Length: 349
Length: 140
Image 1 (cartoon, rainbow over the protein chains, first blue to last red):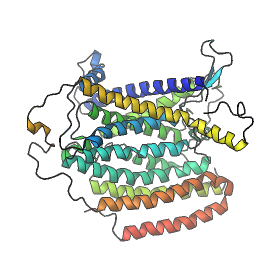
Image 2 (image 1 turned 90 degrees about the horizontal axis):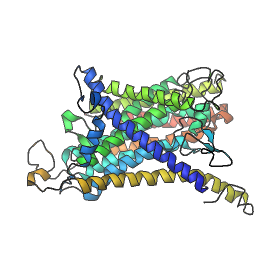
Image 3 (image 1 turned 30 degrees about the vertical axis):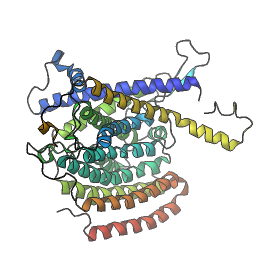
Image 4 (image 1 turned 45 degrees about the vertical axis):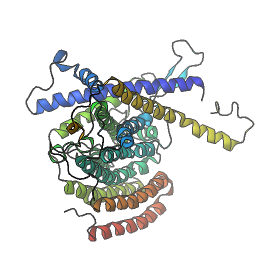
């Protein structure tokens, strides 16, 4: 790789981290305001115009709070756990394509224009990469739960481990239909294959299973067993304070963003605006800014859905969570795979 | 890392060339992981350096247990169920890994691949029903 390409990659990574972490900060704010709206109260509205600077105030407060490490905790694991959670969540962003890309000569700096992709790494195993990296996130939660040496933390960590690996089965099975239709694991190819029809239509069961599993994988309500405030205080992050606590939250919200991007890529047509018909003759090579707008719009809608569901549905009981994952979603995902493969063999797709 | 394929590598065999091209895709992945680690380390050390350090009461440093002084160690026996779930996960996840490879080439192979995967799935589903019948997925 030439120094120029490496510089572009580093610039893209810096931009993605900046944007994602800002979105994460404002997601916490949006979540608080939306939950307040749903519950008919005000929510944070004092810092800045209608509370808009609240995330900034929160961030400063997190940094200047005392960093308590419980003496009974396993220090290495206790410190590593939030870092591990955040690193795995951020690294999963590498392969997500939000558009095709554009040619630029960097404002006349270069003789030959370079092609800048809207994607950090265009891997031919992109889908497997996202699944692999995001399933590592269970380690952050389990290490935190075990390392804290507190009963609630350990319970939360154990629940998280069992829940996340159970739903990973359904998650992995539900995308097989999409892979079978496309015949590729490159996320760009998967989106391109949806030009004529979004995959939500042939693989609707897969879509439902994937969305439910994504909620469970991100530990969001109605599947927030690892945290379940009324039962086990705050679960795996009971003992955490200051920025370490914030890092677990940043990881959780980054996971929500990754999950929304994956739902968009795999089932909702990525950067194609409507379920049928592609771009209706708009040349997206000249209007290269349109695909990211469409993609990000869909992702924001899905993030809103995550928050909406959280403040609408009650929490499941733990045995209900486990039996939903193993006894309902697993067979449904197999049925989806069979349905899609019959459709392919019969020539419909 | 080599430069553009076919540029400085004219003398090397095509295989080495291909390996370099494939590896090149992963440079940004390496970069993103390194930058994420640096970011996480920076966050941890910033709050360590800037936060106040008071010792306070010994009660502050106890593990949280709703205001009670905790009894015993947190790491006691845990339900065997969790290990069972872990073992079952590994079994079924490996089946999914096989199916991913199958799904990528399914369209080219067509009917033959469908019949073969049905045979494979019969075995997997058989195991699944065995697990169900044994009550391995029941939580009291």
